[in-house]
Image 1: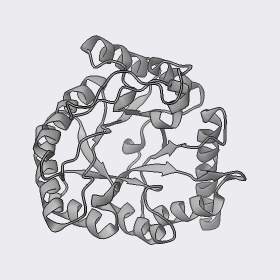
Image 2: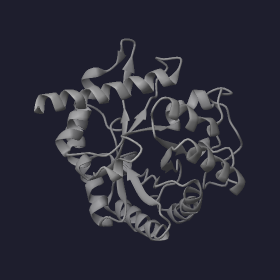
Image 3: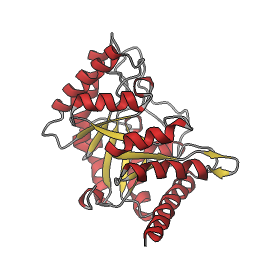
Image 4: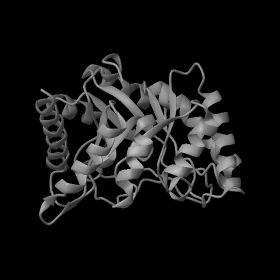
Length: 287
């Protein structure tokens, strides 16, 4: 990972980390039976999405990831407004996270992948560099993995010349271990990148698994666990050590998903400080 690839710094924040602050969600789905009407499972919220770039800037964070369900509108005028808010604060939209669809499903994969492809134009309008999609939610059989690989390869071709890189994540049943994750990426031959997530697999097996897959990751969701004592320091350090061992040098997206702090920014910034100190200590050890 070169310095050019770390423009705007090493840290991003996902809007998922601010879901209580943002409040309403808009659960877009390829399933016509599901309502995409506004819902408030996390309360009414206190901030508009267009206000988040400013909040990032004042905290010295230069990158954002937007969950698809946090976009209150997909109209071109709103997408332009959101892009202007990002550019006005000098914030890089690292990734648009498409939060539904299943390219591995025997019956609905074709429908879902065409729906997912419709988000490429939205990602492009927002100025996103990447678009993270779900590889699949089905059991990791050879047939399901082959189906997912075929659809993701097609999706990557739809994104050609768009300026948007398609990435997927070690998430859900299809990619439940390094074997399936590496197998899918091998089949795609670089057409689709990896967004490695530190919190999707269970300990203790996850540390070796992360060592295995983070060598090929382009992005990282750096989710920490929290309990009544605060941040799980041992787990987070082992995850970061796995990234270091794998040679990962890309950005870290701070994922905070806990009621431990009333203000989500407190949890986000605690994760940021921990990662900064981890690498500072590493540099001192080398020096």
